[in-house]
Length: 392
Image (cartoon, rainbow, N blue to C red; front, side, top):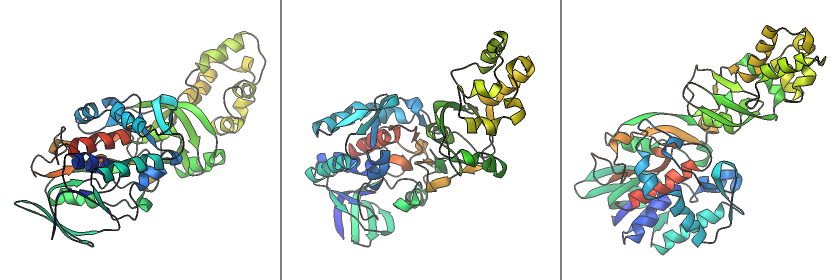
């Protein structure tokens, strides 16, 4: 039996951050991961350039059963703290729209920084290691693994969610929570493309590759971003964002001309005695192929003077208030995050420690805190990992 102070399950963003902080306190830290490399999701994130945080981090950028839970961690270790670390390592980075921060060169710069910090803190990382069993004793936890038997005082679960199973995602962390009687809220794929009903898929699949700015909304949220048509359905930042707030059976409303009151503009042009066909006018706003899918050929070939107010209002509603009922999502296969997870109410918001099982911590994606697209989920990983590292 090898004894250590802290064992962290998961060598991802939150796990490595926690390991660094616990190691800095002089704790003997062991990180275990079944993958053959540390930080696989870090390396693939942001198209390989890692959107590592956002300049504007607020609690409202997160979805949780307990919307207040994330406040403590995000304030104790902020985006500015992580940015300070990035700057100290002289990692070149740049800002994109909406305050997103990306590496100039490669996501590997972030991973190398974290692994260097781990090494400096004396952290031991064991990869290709599976856990066969886990139990709690009066003095801590015992683990039987493919690399031997281990005992620790503090156990940190940073095993991630269910998204992108080809990267090694498993429900292992949720099973640990259930083993110790810690509630797990229902999980579902978040930041994920929509699939369409068969009739709509047949109608819109020909638009694959077309992207347009829009505002997409449901009764809970709205996002102003780009919409991308795919051969399976709808994607792009706007769809990924709203997907975390969508439930099966619901409709979403899409405003394809969010900066235009189309009905008023068409009526104004009609008053100016313009004899243009409707399609000629609309092609200045939207791609021809999209218009052909949304509107009938008869409507498109109607000239403005021949259109009644009612007809114009109907046309505008189809574009400013296009309503569609997704068939579902592409699921965990392409989801960027897992919504739901370990119930925040069972954890300390300051330390991430279980309220009922001393020495047991949950951090990162496995917790019921899900960020928006644009670096928010990485910041939650850094913040929750840092907080646990101060205590574990």
